[in-house]
Length: 286
Image 1 (tube, rainbow, N blue to C red):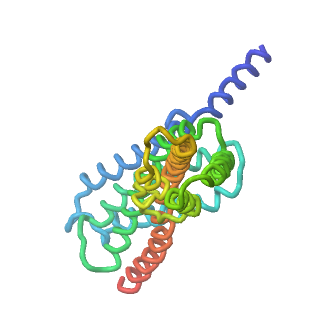
Image 2 (cartoon, one colour; image 1 turned 180 degrees about the vertical axis):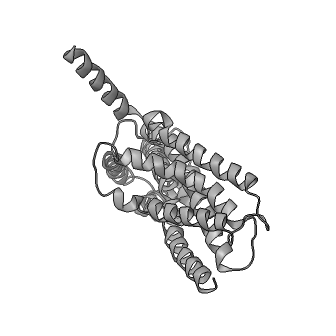
């Protein structure tokens, strides 16, 4: 009996290892977040106070306290990531709770406002919170889809191997271009001198490189099929372009995986500052 129990435990642990953070423990935190949201909505609808529940009512203060504590706790995920542990509060469990409780925060914070907005620090804090949540939703969506595309694009090559393959083609091109005429040689040299990483974030995200000199060399060099040296160079230029395309797809996917953090993290810091100002101003004028 003991061996059967151990086998069952081992099976559950293996399933947990392959389980994503969104489905962690059969979506336990989605269920908890849904219950919290429903309780908040039902309470808002049933509480009979005049005026309707808002940030200044006892119900508003309750939701505000819960929301503020949630925001601080959610912001601690960055610290939690630096400690890799298993068990009840593993990083996977914490991330799952971070996602679903973060979504529940939309309901909690909106009901806390009582749907009263204006040009003040309170609405600023709410707006920053929504930006953080929306950027987080984007982050979840890309992490759910893009890693597979990243893996498929790499074709079992590491980033270092992709760059080494490009360097190998460049060395062949440099040698093959020597017998060509001055104009064609200059085109090849210009292509080889262009840094593939010199393009900005916009190019990486769009995947468009209109000033690519390798593409320019392919378009400007004649393809008459009579000169073997030119044909060899054109063949190598096509290989270089294909390798550049693979590297650029790799950079594009990585940029899409990372760009949301440049919004999510700084705005989270701004949110904590605005939240502090919001709380201080509320108690100052209370």
